Amino acid sequence: MVMLHGLEDDWQSWKPMADELGDRFHCYAIDLPWRAGGGYEWRAGGTAAQWVENALALIPQPISVLVAHSMGANAVLHWLASGTPRRVDALVLLSPFYRLASAPVDWAMFDRSLADFRTVMAAGLRARLGERAERLEPEIVGLMAEKALDRIGPEGFLSLFDIFISSSGIDLSSSTVPTLVVGGSSDPGISGPRAEALSRDMPTAEIRLEDELTHFCHIEQPQRVSELVSEFLLRRLSSVLEAGRRPALEGVHL
Image (cartoon, rainbow, N blue to C red):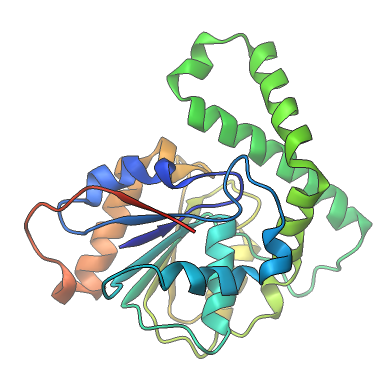
């Protein structure tokens, strides 16, 4: 099982899920160029889809399941539509974002997306802080979030906005890979008509949205997400599941 993180995250954020799934899979988590604290020079070095292919080429054994979160999930969608993806048995996409083809790319969309970006980045900080966030004054957490946003800068937002607005233009209709999409019912990037549109455009996708799941469900609700993943794989991919303990998580730097 290979795990790809989202924007301004890192490979270690997969540890909660790897702890749940590591008895059945050797889990590799890739430290991608859009990692937390990194720069955005990677945009000149290739598309997000090309970086996914580069990452998978580092894995020393056949890949059964590819799991990706947020921007990583959207990068996988672009990789899947590129026409040259390597063989995987199943995909799990957590909290992707999908644009309705009918939604105009205008300044109103830009402003809404920027507001959502700021909200999600602050939520990501709180998710990584975990219980420590509860012990800090809200004003302190807010200042930390603002400082993080200042460091990320416009390039971080634009890299995400670009892959978002192009999401409805990729052809996913020919994919034959069983795919599970998991997210929160109130996540603006995938809920409601966006989920319905992705389901229509990607016939192999099963979409499971639940009220209690957050955008960072792999960190905040790893047990429930792992239950959904396990149920999906047992139903669609039982032949690849084996008993026996493996290393829970192995990080790979790209």
